[in-house]
Image (cartoon, rainbow, N blue to C red; front, side, top):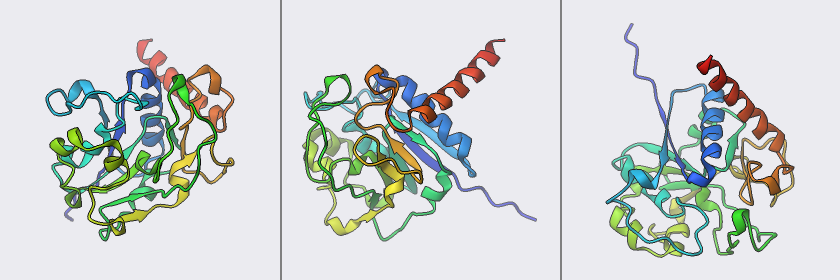
Length: 234
């Protein structure tokens, strides 16, 4: 019997040194629950020197506000990939998300329709409001259909051109994911069925948000990671 190569889910997570613990907890939560092989790569500016060259915008709250759109380029515009912000926790098998890939679309997202409750978020960052806000915080990319996202375009396009998907010929190329795959903590009522929770206002690793919804699960995940680290040093 010939064993066929396993399908691998490619995941890219936005990295910001101020939220390093969030990156590690998220990747741990993905691996722990996955029933399929997964590769996880940080989108880290220190690894994109000479590629990502745009200056920081005063309104961007994280290092990866714009570099996230390099995901298809990092995949050589082949296959599929998931991008997600680091301030998240995976509560379900990522294979369920991977199974939602639809080749009719260039990108698939949770199509949020909401107004932020507060004018500021973590570390005093301005909470901006715009059409399609937070759609880009989880993106399932059909990389071959996203060739417009070259490093040159990502470096020069406006924030709204990127986050409102103006690089696509039409909004018809944007598919919709179930809302459980980007549940906005602090903006939506707690949902027990949330598969991927997003601490978009502020993660429990910031003192002001230690009591937010799903904070107990985030701390439990971090504690499990700490135990592994302690054992490795023993």
